[in-house]
Image (cartoon, rainbow, N blue to C red; front, side):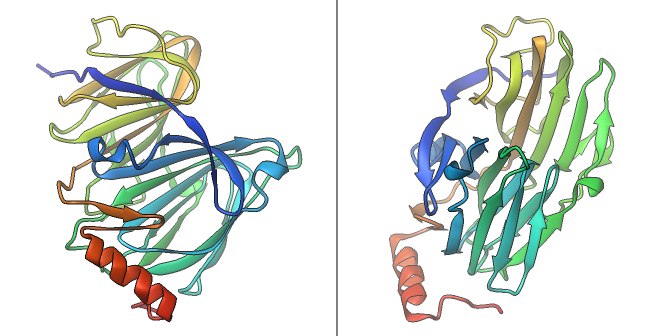
Length: 289
């Protein structure tokens, strides 16, 4: 019998100003990250006012983490120190492993009506992989499978596996799952997860119950811009409200290592942070070209 996960914590996203002046909502970040290992940060950028985002995220470094950007509306133009250049648009994903170090910029553009909407997730790397060669993956919309389940649930599988269908992003050290789930009104998703996995959900649209099991009431319905953090177990159950529900589901193996974090760099010790920023100032930050 499955041990369905109970909701451990519910958080509302908060407005922050990042980059060169981008207004966005932060679902979780530095203060919450110790309880969400291996995940560090989730930002929700959603605005129809270009003044909120056009300043973008000019050239900046990363080391020791992965950044995963998923676009629903608009596009993000990317370029980096490895010579990669590209644009991701609606339904596309960019999965960047900073590893030993990368310098990049991300410049958002809205649709004709000004709408920009997407998410950026930061995932930690263990000490054994923090100085790995950086890599950049464009994951076009058409390569991300859409799985339709009994009851009407639709799941876009970016990373992980649903009903025998595996997502295109593989070979990630924390074995993460990244799912975009849409549920019709009143329908339910029962999804298995390995015990020990950290599991979190973020509501995009609609409302739903994030309860303990298929036959157990999940409490109050939760709406958009709400983060759900789960206790341990081997399955989650989510039930859509009358307006339907769309949410992101993330899961991954916790790393259980010390975290030293300052700005865009996440290492294991303060000394490693000092070295990283010192190398950046001296122009010797990049280890792979």
